[in-house]
Length: 436
Length: 143
Image (cartoon, rainbow over all chains, first blue to last red; front, side):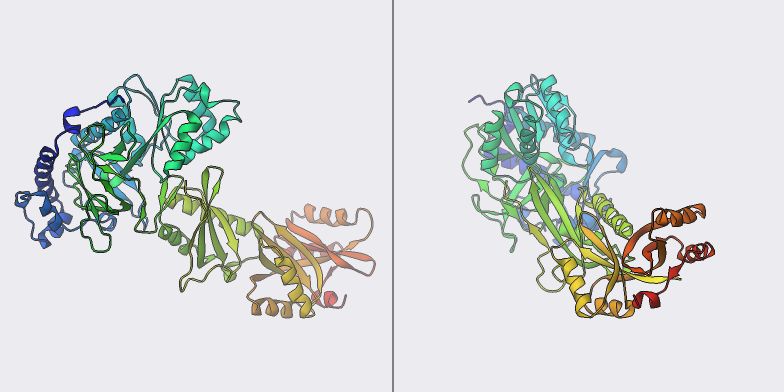
């Protein structure tokens, strides 16, 4: 099998050298972190006052974890380690209470991130001859712009089309002989069901590969998509707090995702005790980013469950491979690639006086796409008897929810007392999707 | 002359309308006029009954979401153009009809229609001035 590298020296650096580099960068990262009010307090409490005190990588175990909640509590600038005029980009994801989590990048940070994404893209066999159709959402979401920059750096022809408008997507694939897609697996499945409608056959397209990310899916779904389109599908993993894509990506062997360990220290911990686990053991994934001056994050808890492969990959890369995400330690839902916490929905419901406090969230599959239904109870005292007022209420709930979670829910209104009561072990989330 | 109408919120569930109507029937409440405004996910049942106080209490006791709205019950000549005549008066006076529906029974020779006007007070006055009779709750109870 042809194995291409973007930065062969770094990607195949022997483990001892790689770990030496990690330690150097960790020391620098801790120094940088100590410039932020948040880490001054947090590290100060743990007795850490300089990066130089780290003698080996094991010393990282003494650093307290950082959580999404820490990011929210220190919104917007509490974790910023440089002057704002050094920042050239920010990205953000929605947070559980409506406070977004923001990341900042300097020009150099952006440059290093782009380079990591370029590594990912080349590891799948892409060259500058490839035409790349980026079907992820652009904007604050890191997935769109992250891959865009990386693919551009490799010299691929980048089509920044973004998500949606299936017929146009397919036409563009055909017109420009797109070879490589970046897309969610459910959307790629959905497109296949539409091809017949457009009188098209996947064989008329020029697709070679797809980068699949933003939502969990199984090995079976990958194989199915590969067969349906005659392509190679590569798994991608990222989270905005760690810059987004470029964190972990599959190589041509497709045996799970290499984590770029010169840029990230990855740990697997027991989510209950916080204790580090061995390679091969499943636990919560924790990252320390080593290449971001604007916003260092130490031991960031992802809430994602996975394991690291202990064996080397035949591609020759020395960077360990992370398994698919096998679950979450919290109740986060992924709906059409968008992360949604039930608490976000709850907060919106509670802010609307015309509905009661009982609610239920239901997720179904319609075709290949997810559909979110939010069931609420009408509050008797607010019922005016006018159907138009209820329709207006539905519209208002829909719009408020869309503003918060960015997806369009279907609202179902019920009579009081019908939904499971707020007290007790009410089942608030009914996920009727079959695993992809 | 105003008449009280009960509006009942109905979720979109099989048998729900039947349950509400049975409840009224079991309590000897007679429905004189009704209509259902329906949408994709819910309905609003609108009824005029012989005993609105009792009906409201029964619905409340059973935790059914309901609301009282004032409507006007108008006698309509039971002949071609009867309804049009009334609507013309209403239109000439710029009165908005939000919705309307018919009674089950007649009052003597006339049909009865329920009108929900934007401004029921003004509407009742204008109708009276044009010799169009509105019936009261007493009349409805005695039908």
